[in-house]
Amino acid sequence: MLDGRGGDGRFGGVAGPRRVPCGVVLLWVGLLNACAPGAHDALKRRAEAGLLAREICGKFPAVAEREARVFAEEAVETAAAKREEWGVRWTPWVHNMLVNSGKRPRGLCYEWQNTMYFALEEVVPAGLKMTLVEAHRGSPFREHHALSLHAVRGPWKEGVLLDGWSKGGNLYFKPVAEDDHPWQYEAEEPYAEGDRRLARPGR
Image 1 (tube, helix red, strand yellow):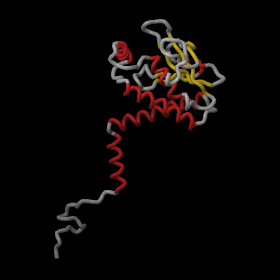
Image 2 (cartoon, helix red, strand yellow; image 1 turned 90 degrees about the vertical axis):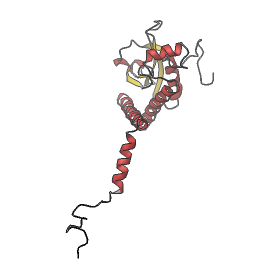
Image 3 (cartoon, helix red, strand yellow; image 1 turned 60 degrees about the vertical axis):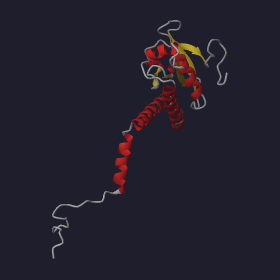
């Protein structure tokens, strides 16, 4: 008796619906979610943190990989969080004009420098320290401030540059000696705005 199926078990000779394995469904859902803007940004930040951690471990072999990773993730995430908080949407120079005209709260290069220092000082890998560096001091259009992460007993010039300003909240990092700016020593810790007192959180 005919039951409407072909000899191979297909209805009318046409393949019926097949059950898709649960694992395949979850994989596709994960891929679709990863395409969302927030997920893409998170993956990008994770990749950047990985690159920074490798830069730190490559330059300072004695540093524990886990400590380098924690520091790198905190650095990248802090820069991204401040980018949102300060409304950084344009190039650094345009954002500077917005800050100076009162249309944005913060985001000048020395504010990035101070904020990054205080956010990272508790997670600096053992054997390393941060030093404030500056370039073109006194120049109204070229003065710049950043951080150097370097060995406690080593020169800051052999450190890794950390700069939240140059890429608008996407953390820029590079060996200090390989960067184009003529960096100079500035201070061991941030100063309070407007005077020479050390600027600790809450002051």
